[in-house]
Image 1 (spheres, rainbow, N blue to C red):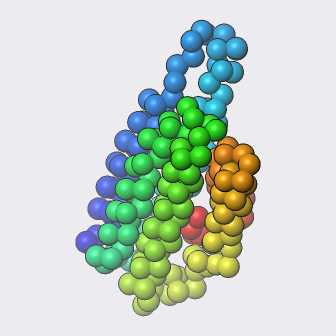
Image 2 (tube, rainbow, N blue to C red; image 1 turned 30 degrees about the vertical axis):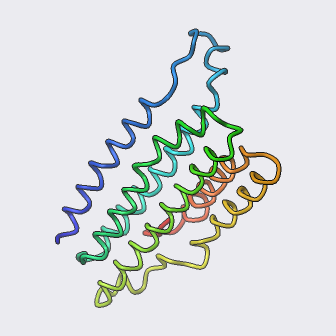
Length: 191
């Protein structure tokens, strides 16, 4: 399969996911600052989810720009990444409406973990299929920091289960900000 077909498919799915994500935002009961403040959790969850989706899209674009082609395993791993991302609107809505619900926050956090795992597997399979590409082999696509954000998520789960369920949502924000800040100076690096 040509990598452009996979990229185009991914772009279309991501556009749909982002559309659904914004449509899941609750409307304020009144068009005042107090009305918008009352739904601040929804905007926070939307912001985190948007950052996650944008970050995956951006890094996918950079990675697919470098590789020559994709094999069946890369296609399936990217498909699973998109599947996990497609769950974000559902769990974003659930987590924002049930901020202190441990199951809601857990499912949101696990969705991010799933996205991360499948994306890393996508990149690994893409690298393994393009071993003759010098630029791919010299790239730092899976550097030593690639799984560090999962430590933040783990800490969020521990704090969430012991005392404060919104810690899981907050840890997702810290994790995605870490990905963006850590890798902003690397060209063609994954989340």
